[in-house]
Image (cartoon, rainbow, N blue to C red; front, side, top):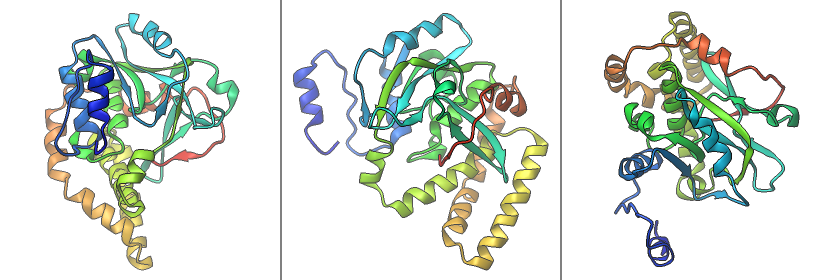
Length: 277
């Protein structure tokens, strides 16, 4: 932080342990350092662009009596407090990439259930499971998809992520990122990380084959149409194949298949807008 946030925290909340970095290490690394220093069983991740209007923690904590629970999401609205902004999310494969959709219909959002990933902006996470998985992966640095990746790896180990509609927050989506990076760079990282997620996590040979087909098709299309942003993102992703290979080899045994994960987190269906993650 370049303002006086640190001094204000020390002054107003001296009991709070402040993890201070000399340089901006990005979302994932900062969260990892904070969780490592924490001493409690359950961690609450809360971004600085989250607006808390009332009690939200207790409804989240109730779910952790089940040892299979990795994390619990709150119901998130946009800044206006009415427009849906996440919390209950499903995923499906489309043209070789994982597409995400959050529930917009009130009927879908008012019931709890499983959600595909723990939103790093506002979620409760079991600390020991977070550490066992190695926390947020630096592969995706500086931002985007770390929370999706971590949650997917949790599902692969047989753990789950719940959505709790009684816990409600407001979120100015990507406000901090938009202030620190150009829109061109944000788009590049978003496209790159969507490719990296597939290569890093998907184990189904059929899904990987389909993804490879679509990536090659997109590549040829980008060459003919001079779609430079896509070509840059693809080249950027290719440069990390070695890191992905080493991570996949070091992964623990996969207990739950890709199709099972996508199926169990897609019980609700509605027509809505995809999330670019």
